[in-house]
Length: 299
Image (tube, rainbow, N blue to C red; front, top):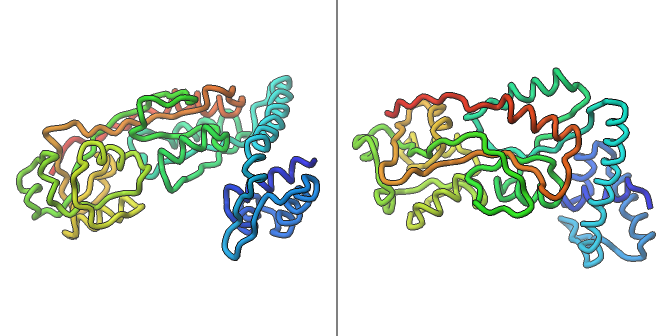
């Protein structure tokens, strides 16, 4: 069994189509579809049902996802061990990203990784389900490291390193009643037109927990678009303070009855030893991705 066929199979699992998998792997589409077909012949079972739009895992396909990922991790561990003997630190590190993280200086940390270890490639992965998607990725082994926002207290299988904390604030039009008041309580938002973000995002988790009774009028996957809508009077939205300060023409209003805090952490698996490259990236983040001082002036 060729490991590259397993790699093609897993890319199809992650991307949903042969074309998208080929694009992610930077190979031609025919190589992926042929490789998966060869894997199926070797197994004597189909691993995907081919539909007009997406690939759907069969029972056999679902059964081999875990072992296939373990096989590729074992291959990576072998190369990592050899690099360790040579004193080299290199390889790709898959990092689960979060949108609009401005409260920590990731650029400084990643730049220092490049200066010290030019053989390391950092692959940032954006999951549409935000923090919850990153948690799944670390547990499944598709992510070496991941940033989490407003994460649950109990996360079996993950090791967490807290990086920063900042409050969520209300962004609204300058003439909005809460902008005029200069502050708000969570009960003030019950009848407001709320601009929400997707389930799974850390900011959404905070809002769901502390303001469960609200009237959501739109859900968007872009905080800057959400703030732009708020500035134009479409509704109001809650975002981290550092992000709020990047929106011109809007008012920023603090909450007075609850902290509405958004914690940021970086996580890795607690059941698998990180590669030397992943450990190097983690160490640089913990050393250099210090909290950025955010202006506290609210208007």
